[in-house]
Amino acid sequence: MEANVRDETHLYLGRHYRLRLVEGSVQAVKLTQGRIEISLPDPFDDRRVKTLLESWYREKSMFHFQSLFDKHFIIFSGVSVREKPLLRIRNLRTRWGSISDDNVLTLNLQLIRAPRECIEYVIVHELCHLKHHNHNSEFYMLLEKHLPGWKRLKSKLELSLS
Picture 1 (tube, rainbow, N blue to C red):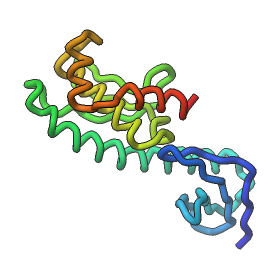
Picture 2: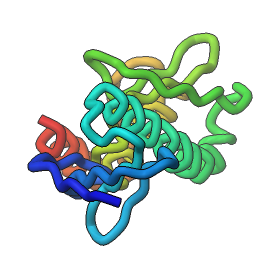
Picture 3: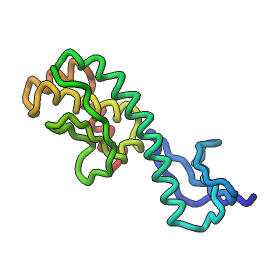
C-alpha cells in the first residue's frame, strides 16, 4: 500500500488537514493522525478524489448540522407554531443558510469547513427567522438572547472561510 501526502490542505470544522492519498482496494475517507486520508485504487484519479472528499464532507455535514439543529430547535420550538423545519444541505453561492416559507432550513455545504461555533451561529440565525422574518431590531434581540456574542462568531465565520 503506497501513500502519497499531497501538498494541499482542506478545512474541516475550522481546522486545516493535510490530504493523504493511499492506494487501496476499498474506497474510504477518514480523519487519521491529523490528516484527511483517502483510500482508493488509483490515488492519482483527481476526479474520484474530489468526489470522495465531497461525499465525505456531505456525510459529516449532515451529522454535525443535524446535531446542532436539533439542539437549538428545542429552544426555539415555543417561538413559533410552525413544525420543525426540514434540514437540507446544498452548495449555495452567496449564503450560509436560509429558511423558506415552506419550512425548509437550507445550509451551505461549505459551512462544514467552518468552526463548529460558527455553524451554530448560522443555525441560530436562521431559527430566529421563524419568529422574525426580517432583520429588524426584534430579530437581533432574539439572536442576542439565544446566542450572546453572535457578532464575534459572524466575523469569525467570514474570516475563516474568506
